[in-house]
Image 1 (cartoon, rainbow, N blue to C red):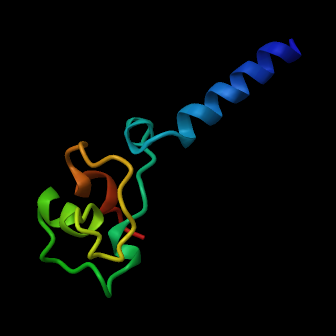
Image 2 (cartoon, rainbow, N blue to C red):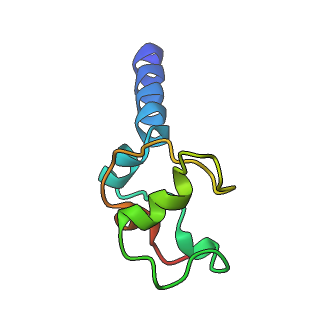
Length: 82
C-alpha cells in the first residue's frame, strides 16, 4: 500500500511540475504576463512578440528565457488574470 501511494505521489508531482503543456492540460497555467504590467501591455497579440524577448537569440534581452520555444499559443497559457 505504501509503495502504491509513493508511486502515485511521485506521478502527480512529475505531471504537475513538468512543462507548461502538462499544466495547461490540467488547467494550471504558467505565470501570467499580467504580473508584470510595466513590461507587458495590451499590444501583445501573438507568439513572435513574446518570443522576441523571451527567446532573444543574440542575448540582448534580460527577460527570462522560455524553456519551450517551439510551443504555440504563448498567451493561451500566460495571459490569465492575476
